[in-house]
Image (tube, rainbow, N blue to C red):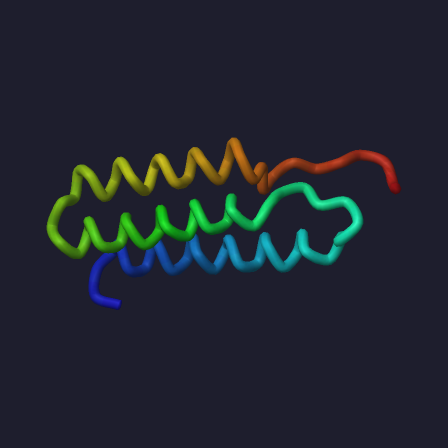
Length: 84
């Protein structure tokens, strides 16, 4: 844990784990698929690698692309109204 990329990607990966565990409780009505979490996890790994290799512009771009993928695909902040 030496660079800012280490910290950012670990925090984002921990967020993905919590989101996956939270959503895996409802087995009968899944919102997303496991491959979506795999893509986001690979995005974290690539971001960290690029940042640690000194390719800052590409690391920031990959990090932003990973955040966009998570936001639009996994929709972590979507709330359902009503009870079911």
